[in-house]
Image: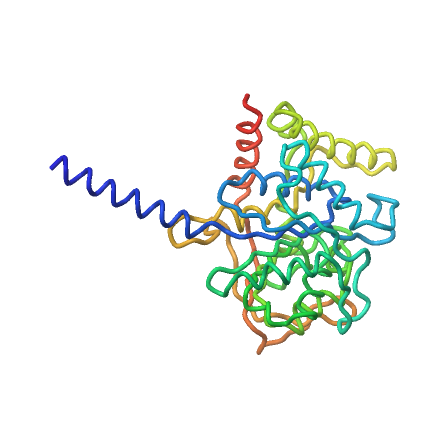
Amino acid sequence: MKKILLTIAALFALSFAANAQMTKVKVLIDNDFCGDPDGLYELAQHALSPTTEIVGIVGGHLSENAGFTNRKDQATESVEKANALLDVMGLKGKYKVVAGAETGMTSSDKPIDSEGARLIISEAKKCSPEKPLYVTCGAALTNVASALLIDPSISKNIVIVWIGGQEYSFGAVPPPGYSAVEYNLNLSIPAGQVVFNKSDVMIWQIPRDVYRQCLYSTAEMHAYIKPYGKLGALLSDAIDNVMKTCEGFNIAMGEVYILGDSPLVLLTSLQSGFEADPCSSKWVQTPCPLIDNNGAYQPNPTGRIIRVYTQIDTRLMFRDLEARLQLASGK
């Protein structure tokens, strides 16, 4: 009986190991690291994940009046900020970190060629529909939209996981004082039109009402992140600096901050081992809407089916972030 049990345990271990290898995900990170610090949190957590193969990092743009930076070369600044974070982690040089477009697309027919767009194409060609490349976008869709226009053949090999877009009719009501077009979509409406209207790429969308669920208190940040090494201090200080700057302009930030880019980690790196999927979060299937020139959704009943998240597992997402930072610090 003991030998039988040992044999069963060994077979289970082999099956588990094989499945763990199978569920390792390839991720290409595209974010505006020169902007909201939530992108730095996402990059750090992704880089600390042992089951994530980061095949590239693309620095993205904001807008001219974004408020986080006065520089015009924002994609270049995003590369600098990403490298500075990786340097603190002892990972500088491990990944390809390149700049994407410095501005948003002005036409859905004209891509903006860049190192970032070319890197997306190159890595997508190495993947397949069965083992896709997750392109995680925490800001504008400019770079991935440009890649799709330059080489439409990559669409079947990628899943775009995007933080952006305003609420759907089946979601929550918009927040007080909301803008009709959500911030990230408004960075480049033509890029959104390429991805939604003109491509057949798979989209996993985390709209505004869902990424606003990612509230993390400053008390938690100072207790569970700041004390843990240079990385914890860098991340915590980045939020503190934004909070202080806002207070200087009489913008009351309260006791919480929206770490809205963290679902990019939750939905890629933290999938279940068996029957891999981000199964602790809730989503609906819906026909892909069309995005008009004003950035509004227009019904498209015959559109391809996309995934729109309605609720995310913030417990798993934030506890994993805290644990990885604490383990990495050695404390």
